Image (cartoon, rainbow, N blue to C red):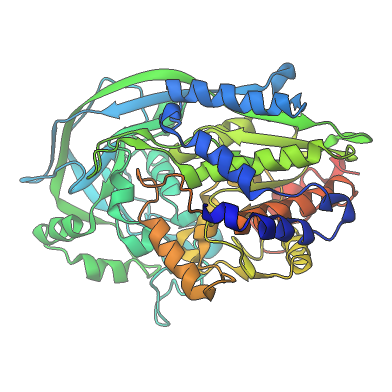
Amino acid sequence: MTRSHRFLGTALAVAATAIAAPALAQQTVSPERLSADVKTLASDAFEGRAPGTPGETKTIDWLVAQFKAMKLAPGGPDGSWTQAVPLVHTRMGTGTVTAGTRTLMQSRDVYLSTVRGVDRVAIASAPMVFVGYGVTAPERGWDDFKGLDLKGKVAVFLVNDPDFEATAGDDAKGRFGDRRMTYYGRWTYKFEEAARRGAVAALIVHDTAGAGYGWDTVKAPAGENYDIVRSDPSSRVLLQGWIEGAAATRLFAESGQDLAALRKAARRSDFRPVVLKQAFSVDLPVRHDTAESRNVLAKLPGKTRPDEVVMFGAHWDAYGIGAPDAQGRTIRPGANDDALGVAGVLELARTFAQRPRTDRSLVFALWSGEERGLLGSETYAVDPVYPAAKTVANLTLDILQTAGPARDVLLVGAGQNSLEDMLGDAAKAQGRVVTPEALPERGLFYRADHFAVARRGVPTLLLMAISGASDLVTGGRQAGQAWLDGYMKCYHQTCDAWSKDWDLRGAAQDVALFQTIGTTLANGRAWPEWREGSEFKAIRAESAGERK
């Protein structure tokens, strides 16, 4: 008998009694169904669910079949089940990479890729410039570039924000939320800023604390990358990637620079870019093609205000097939990241489909391309099926813990909007409390699909179990930390696999929270609001006239 079966009776009781509303008590969130759906999606037959592969075709077909069986309506454009996500798919080949006289080895010293549909990346003797954290933030009185022209150069960045390691004597202290990462700290921002300034390449110095993950995670895609098809490919740098920390220290030392000292200098507002002595050269072949991936969208139309939408989301994609691990496994199944989130959205759809229709519409969105830079949700946000002004909220599931019931629920991005108050009320009804994320420096708020619509003003709520150690009913926070440490070893790896030993009662608790919040929103008239100080409040305010 498996752990899941032993605790099934308790599991259903947890999920049912956790929800205060009597109408929901009969439609429980089932740990067994969550497990069964993950077992299917993370099986070898789905080949790691990479966009543009046979694994995607099987995934999309299976997901649509689930929604049809629930008797949901198609939620995509023109009455379809899917939304097209045109992608550029690139795979970097082997070749030469040098900085000065030193050869840099792909995966060991650097991790390089491109999102341009080119046959070859050839850069000859480009100047390398260290730009600190590479931040331009006039509203915070910060500019790392000081008018530097990056055209034709290689920009070398530090990861995270200028105040990530700041102490009381540093100018940066407190300007970027202290340990809480802002969007300026994300690698996506740094690559975008390099492109805006004309750089030919952008490289980020890796450190585990600043990035929030180790080098194995950085190199896991093995030279593969994706991007949405863009009308102006030059809006992305020709070459992007990371330099492993020790390799970067050696590289700077050979240029007569102390990287540790430059880290400190970069925490001052008077920092100026530093030109390194080495020139950077690369000659690497690229295989590329275009693929049309797909988002999956289903809906339950509202009975009185169908144009107002409450959206639930998760991403169906994982990392597909890669290099063999020590056991010879090549499929990276993404069982928790994010097949379990998908299972949660499917479970929400099942339970809502069994109930009377809500006043507002419910949309269930399963996104493509999250692992490649939130590409599916960004495609949707650029061309939304449901206008952002009339989207009440987006509730996203991305990685749930698998170690049993918890006394708390982890909140990512505390202080952003009023949905947090609803989360607190729903958690209290379950006998739980809300705990703000313990690792705000990881910037998780900017690393999940909800962010694409948050940037367009839609209030969002994200549940992500890697934002800290849960206070587990059995073993407390120490046990929660042990689970987190163990899972992070499998993050984006072949070992993120389904297990019969998972205890999904805690995951069911979290899905039930969204069931409660979604019901309140969908049967009410309230519009959640961004808090003062949120970077998204002004965006939402621009469309206030479109909401009643």
